[in-house]
Length: 377
Image (tube, rainbow, N blue to C red; front, side, top):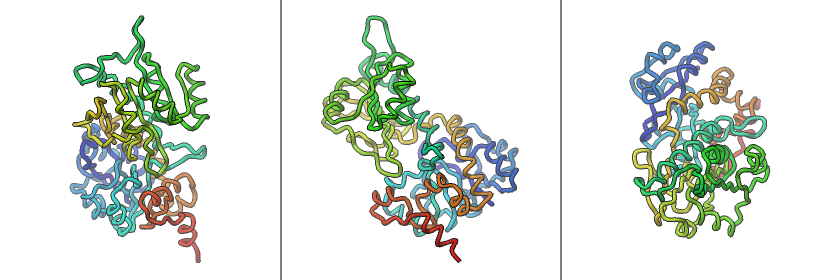
């Protein structure tokens, strides 16, 4: 099978959809991999590295898409790229279709594309194995970024993200005890912050409580309690995820108004619309804005700033699914692996994810039914 790796064109998207290691695995199993020139340059993977792994370098984005049955990307197709894929091909990426413009979704459907959303693939335990490392890295980064913006020179409260004898530590409030929240709580606790984590899932809170020996405060996010916690936060990290759907607004604008001046919000849920009412997407070169005296950091692709680590982590966890689709064919791989099938948003132009369909107001058809009909005599 032909697999393509285009150069990402989203602003400041420095990651790459496959590494030379991933290319090598696919080539050794008899597949052809076409990598666009300089696709991995920002992550310090050279064209020579890819060629040594067995890839064929191509010199236009159009050629990558027209020659490929499966395309491995990082981010979703941009408006400028919608006409590039081969009709009927499969695009693997972090899709976030629920918050995509409706005209984009309609065009993807017209192209009869199959979209595999890395953020939705699940394993036998129900975990998200491809999303997890990206979320874990984002959670760790959030604490380091918050420490930077708490400094006076950045407009912050002039607080050290740490613990000094005789001085109360900063309060870090984290929304969500999933991969982002878990990593952020672990990192913030390790450097001495006072950490409060809120989640509706008691089991996740119990797991975090056990891991950190009760040294973080865990709580359910009931409305009155949430406003009390945001009011005392020096740092507020949003890490809420509803698979396939838009993130809910948990923190209202009124709560933000009542936060301390110079405090910092990091809305890591912004790639799914954000969980804080005052959030709006920012970029790596202009990562923050100030609303009601509170610094907001809302970069959707924050791990693009650590592209070598992020690209290697993505290739490590996504590769087995790509290999499976290449070896068996996409449809058979989906029939054989319910977890991979859970990652499908569009199948040959049919919207199959119920949450994304609800968000886009487009009826969804269950994938199992479509695969069954396709395989019927």
